[in-house]
Amino acid sequence: MKTLQLTVALIVITLLSLPLQAQKTGMQSITPGDLKMHMLFLASDELEGRDTGEPGLQVAARYLAVQAEHLGLVPADADQDFLQPYIIREKAYDRENSHVTITMADSVSVVNRHSFYIFPAPQGDLTVIEGEVVFAGYGINDEKNNYNDFENIDITDKVVLIMNRAPMNEEGTETQFDNNKWSSMQNFQYKMQYIYSQEPRAVLIVMDPKSGMQSIEDVNPAIAKYLSKSRSLKTEEEESTVQGKRPGMVLIHRSVADQLLEASGKTLKDLQLEIDRNLAPQSFLLEACKVKIELNMATTDLVVYNVFGLIEGSDPVLKDEVVIYTAHYDHLGTDGEGSVFNGADDNASGSVALIEIAEAFMKEKKRPKRSIGILWVSAEEIGLFGSQYFADHPLVSSENMAAVINLDMLGRTKTEEDVQSKRHGLTIQGGDSVKVIGGLQSKVLMDINKKSLNEMGLVGNYEYNDTRHPDRYFYRSDHINFARKDIPVLYYTTGTHRDYHMLTDVEERIDYDKFLKMTRFCYKVGFNVAQHSGPIKVDKPMSGW
Image (tube, rainbow, N blue to C red; front, top):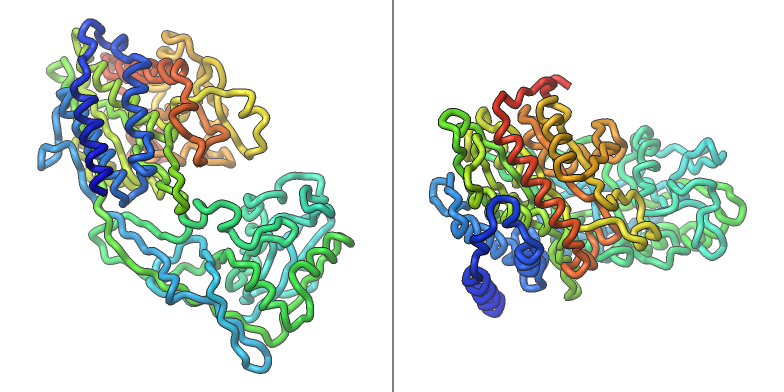
């Protein structure tokens, strides 16, 4: 920790000693060199992935607060240090006191202490799941392929054991069905639609043997790490520990599945081979076999920070209104094996852009009419908690928020590697295309957005700006917490790429030409909103949708 503090101190001193480019005003002060300078720090290994509650995130918060003060922003918090503290309640798995117990017909119990993961995250300190077990193959009911793992079995109030994926070819590399929705970890969303309708007690999910994996830890250690913690925004109200009725998914180790199946005389591998060979379900009730899953959680309160500063507008009346820029500065931390999720594009890019945008406003010969708020929020990756807290406890009046402009992933452009990537659902934009979300509440704001795109020679992609889009992009970043308050929002991004949430999201892969265009464009949008002489009218408030 002393080494980290020393490194941070030296970098901050170095950055603050660099000469400002005083000859450049307004938007022209945003340069690739300055973008890279801040990026090298925020996406560095020394910040250890900026995970919520970890020292690296606290260092990033202090760095951003120092930048705000250095640029001359005005603090709005009680302590006048640009920091808004709040508390995240973290519940982490207590592995020593958590296990799976399997009881057979002869009342002999076997305790399995391999790691397991429950999703959604439990709310109470102790979660107990127990009951009779039904093996239901891959857990698929698919009329198109004339395949139903639930035919002739009753899973109501039972614990259901299923494999991931679908009937596979001999090598286990391709599904035998003629669509790809069953072929990856993401197939759970399709499987659960039917399974939940049958009201099971719980669903145990195991990696199929042909995958070569024993548990979710083999798929991605970061996913396992994420699932082993439950984090929520601590509120003043008394917390409820009552679990909802919706059954949980439990990701188990393959040894648990084989122990459950032992009395049947078959292994999971045997059953998978039989299903795949004949494309016929092999589902059955595990006679006189019961499972009990006990998960204990340890609770810790984490103090984290939003960072906020103001730039006063020039109009005596309109300066009371504030156009707020926001970007999250947290990321995923480390993988537990020494590697860092640097989060260069997600979202050091948006955080760096805000530093440069703030400097550009401070260097304008004449500032726009409305005031500008610069808000760096935390805990986005674990639930949009930082923006939720600010929206509920604003440092400027909600009634005075003219608009919110959210920046999340601005630093990449579409490449051939993205085109060739097998990752599902990539939305990365190429050339001069910008992924635009928002503007749905206010025609004025949408018009300013389109005007600004034209002025900067960019093209808006509105494909994902649909509240009914199956991937729900409208709801997946920090702007949504302001939209719910009927504050009009815009959200800009260049989209998800092959390195999204991967260890390879590093500074070296930032496209500084695209990053510069995006940062200057986002500055231009905010300037035009702040300079607009009429009201930023909300025609279609979200509360009325």
